[in-house]
Image (spheres, rainbow, N blue to C red):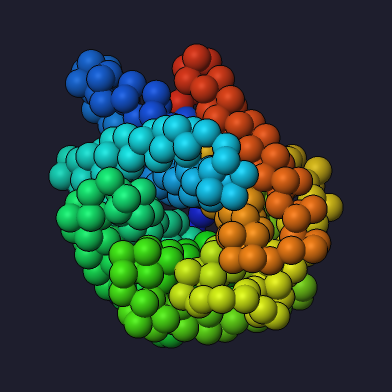
Length: 367
């Protein structure tokens, strides 16, 4: 399918499916449950209600599960309550289950919209999050049920590999506009491979985990060079796309977690270098925060959550491996900051629930 023929994002649209006015789609457990409960009633008023769930909603699972992993590490290192991390994983699993049902339903009741999302040169990359989210839930399940964890890992890993190969093959055909080059390009292969490495290692397959880490590492380096060139030399990102810059934080920080998952002993130079680059990305994003925040709050801001949670997890994993020195100062600062940021995302999402702005009705198609 030629990428040049893919529909383009209109300037007034959020890449996560909401309008740039800020009436973006809500996220989280309450959003998903309310959507399921009211779907039949709302469809009597508008037959399209409930059919427009963007695949980007799976990013919420990444953020919640990522914070669950951070709290698990904090329990091991600092003795913080284990129930908080497990509770976050339960919430993440509930959101994942709701979103899988709704996204599958979208393919049944509105396949033309699902296919249009898959053809869109920016939105299509979010479809890869289905597999990434599934693997994270597999990692959450492993300590409680190895059988369930392995099944979810197999499903999520197979989906991630298949989608990553398909999407990369499309990219290699060319025909893209420079404006379509955004950090979402990291999602199919970089995020997918790093998460596959971490969860596969936790499942007891270190050899396979190292192969997955290599796939993610070199995909990251290749894509980052293209993306940074676009940011340096092309017009700035459209307002609705600016929150997607939050994804830029993820490769270095999630890569650090993946690297620590596939290695043993003294973390060494590579782990410090990866985390250092992640901290640099976080500082650049802080410098750009006022510029990014010109886009009103919406689901698109969950793009930051996976990288933020991995930034909190990485120094804890370093300490767990016997590291000392600067990391002991970074760890509590980054952990507190990550919790505050993800808490802000949750509060903002709940606020949209009670404002009745969970799902924005799609703009009419232009003939």
